Figure (cartoon, helix red, strand yellow):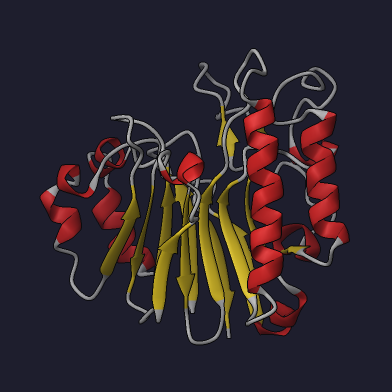
Length: 252
């Protein structure tokens, strides 16, 4: 089973940049998209007609903002939103129940340049941790998406100059420490512990992506029960169309 996650920074924008051709080439069993910035009625027609896939989505109340969508050819037993209006009104989470696991497609809040949204982000993180801990009592859990946080210095090109930037604040990094201390596994870093230059997001400033001055803020986090099923995980850094690139998890 191949699962791909990608913050597309606007599904209508990425559609115009070869998205359908890329989708057909990769042919994932499940595709989790974040920051779609559209409701289903605004999806380009070509997207809603992809053969063999069912589309699930959670759009923000605010137009052109946030939102997540999942394309799946796997049969889900159930799909829910987070269940808290504060987050569902921003289209933050889809919770899919597969026969073998729960899969959460999540777009974590950005703390904002002035840090005004950091408290909201941290509340979301804490509520998310409670949610996945509860879900794994029933069956294994995978959570994927844009976490908007680089965990360690190895996860961004310029850690020292970004120590006071949201996405690398001590409070944000400490939450990832807490997540992992409770047994959750950052599967990319588990399999590639010393890999440097492995980033999933780059600023839109000129030449930043070409010089690979990036951050790894998109993750697959899995519970220990799934570790034996992991075939591989990868970062598709050559895929353009967004300021993020897709990440992949393949399971037996």
